[in-house]
Image 1 (cartoon, helix red, strand yellow):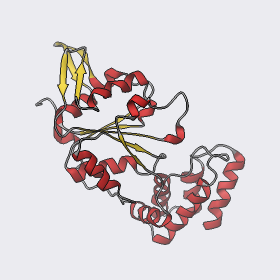
Image 2 (image 1 turned 90 degrees about the vertical axis):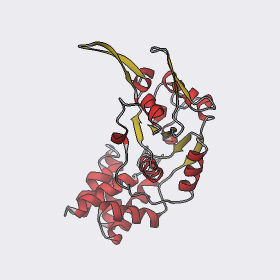
Image 3 (image 1 turned 180 degrees about the vertical axis):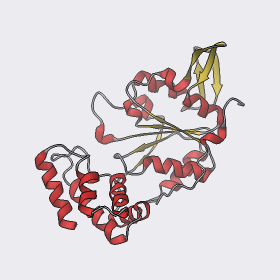
Image 4 (image 1 turned 45 degrees about the vertical axis):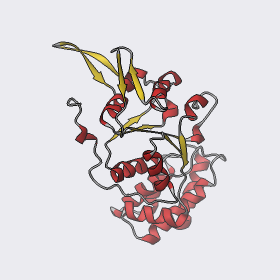
Length: 268
């Protein structure tokens, strides 16, 4: 479609992604079968980076949507807008992706309302269509279109979960924080620090992850470890960098902060 600039959705530089198992091969096979894919795992463990890596590897445009509880179906599929020339239709990101043959990544889809997520159903089975009811158009997805969703099962509750009718339209890949050695590699590469610094940061993270469910809702993510490493690479004292990135964002509880501060002090 001429009104869509496909190039703006291209991943032009190779994202750094360190495979931890067979997820690349599994995703590639799912893409070739046009099987929608669900990525499940904790925050900051590499789900979004993985999708960027696969879009680059497969040479496909990538349309990413950060889902939230206020998102309506119109935010996904499109709406009529009023301008100086009158009313005009504007495609939403899901419709754009279906038209141009992009990978559409709905990040943290469980945050969206269930009446919003049902609009993806016709795109996730043999129909591969998207009805634009307000416009009276049925969009047939481009042959290369692929739908990927992600969410964090740790945040699930009875109120916030995907319907079985949605879940059973996807193949699923489990993600978690990598093993210590691989996570150290990632932190050293992304944060620009020496391997021994990265290893210490990972050890701090493991201490904190053991506290999940015992005062912490979430453990320290790989993303936060990269933040800490980036500050250290800029010349910030390692302990100060860790407190800013690994302790203060996680909790406001004084006792838990002290526990995490002590974990940092053990290694730095």
